[in-house]
Image (cartoon, rainbow, N blue to C red):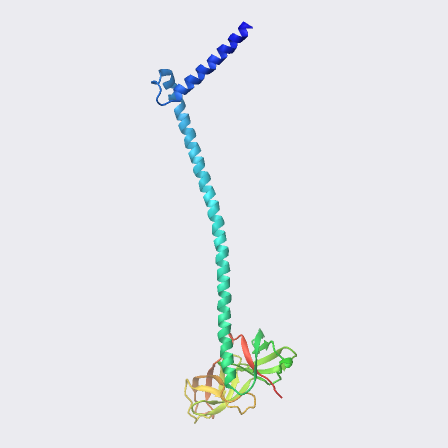
Length: 270
């Protein structure tokens, strides 16, 4: 019994002594460092320094990786937001352009006594031998074969085929198209003929008639199709050959047929 209590006492004493030594060695205000402790510190310090640098490097790498991941995610989110903003802006811009075109139509249709119906172009003839378009209005909307088709800039053409809800329009640039017309200033008469190109020809103007480049060609109303005074185009080139009775006149159409999207069609009110 005595020996067991002695062992417990010795163990507690050793435990207290060891703790005292550790506290003493770890304190910066302790007694001067012994030679053995100095050697120990000299050996351990480089390893401890290397471990600290490794830990610092690992933390830097981890922080850099984490920030990079966050930056990539933020960049993707910003790109999505930018894409949505651009899409919205394009929609608004398209609505603004459509609004401008419709305002022109309203102003134009209010200036003429006839009744017009607005239609959308839904198809274009891809063939180089025909210049036609398809619109989304037809017999159910009061359209008939021969109805004139216009825009605020001038004459587009006339309807050649009508279905219940669709119609085919022959453009004035088609070689089968002919519009009775006259020069706005000099009142020289002629016929505007298509030639399957972007420009048209003003034919049957006598060589003696005074026709100048830059003058406007308008509809005469004598063909019983197009109302009088609608713009057709401006004279681009005049050629007179002494051996010919008529002048060769090329006109630039007032309408840009590659860009029109909506048209006005004369509505049959009979």
